Every structure is written in C-alpha cells, then in structure tokens.
Image 1 (cartoon, rainbow, N blue to C red):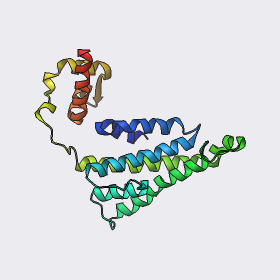
Image 2: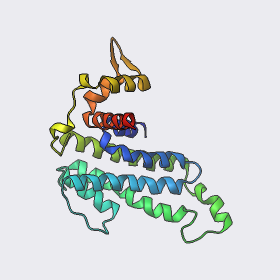
Image 3: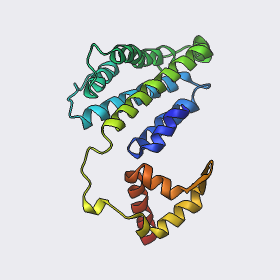
Length: 215
C-alpha cells in the first residue's frame, strides 16, 4: 500500500481515503474480513468520486463492479481497450471482497465459537497479499489517470489563490514540522514542495493554519 499512500499524500483531494488504508493495514492479521470490507469500500469510493466529478449517474444499488466499470468509462476507456478489459477483470475482486467478508466475518450469519477462531485461517497469506495488492494497483491506476486528465475540475476563484512569499508564517510553521528534503545536489523545504506539487492542499493547510492562529 506504499504507492497508494504516496498518491493520497500527493493529491490532497483523496486524503479521506487514508481512513480505509489504515483499517486495511490494521486488520490484516487479526481480522482479514475487516480488511476485505475496507478494500472494497476503498475501490467503491474512488469509483464513485470519479463518476461524480465526471457527472456520470450511478444507480443507487450499483455494485462495486458496476461503479468501477463506469469509472473506467468516465476516464475515456472503451470496452475494447485492453486496459479496460484487464482492469474490469481485476475490479471483479472488489465485488468478491464483499462476498469474502460475508464468508469469514465474525458477525455474518452468526458463527460458532470454533468458526470465529478459525475464520482467518481459511485464507492463506499469499491470497491475502494478492487481494490487497490488487486493490492497491487498481486504486493507484484510477487515481493517477484521473489526476493526469483532471488536475483541477473546478476553476479557482481569486480568493483561492495565494502567493507563496506572502505566507511566510505558515511556511515557517510547516517547515518546522516536516523539515527539508534532500535529493542529490538539490534541497527543498516541505512548504515549497507542498505549494508546487499540490497547491490545493497547500491552500487547505494554510487556511487551517490561519484559523488556528485566530483561535
């Protein structure tokens, strides 16, 4: 999930997905049914967000598989595109995640004490790794494609633009928190990186900083 977490950090709009990632990683060993459920929810959330931004209507009862197929179509992939065929097949895993959760979940349909203790043993470590890594691959593919084509879907108003040099107090605060990053012969402060990589996230953090200062 390292690449996925990196993308979420890079593109601020996807930050709420961190909650799903945290749950997936937390329950991998103790209760994989929870990891499976959150993996399914992660893919579904990404698909629904893309469809929403692209103004693609979804049925209220659409399955996660259907949501993802619509998301790929919204990104411009036709049914004949190889990437769509492969990704649709992988996306089926999202649907199976829900079925898997029902099969091994501690509360699904009730369990005997022995079944509750043994439910995680029904899936070997290799299968767990495959399911989670596949989820991360599909999620990264969708996010990257969406961001490459839609860096900003809503036009920014003048109030939503700031000059880096005018935010000295915030820049110092941010740099004290995260420091400076060295890349070979080059060195950049955390505030510079945030401003130039994701100006929307920079603006959000800057506004939060101003609010805290006022309080």
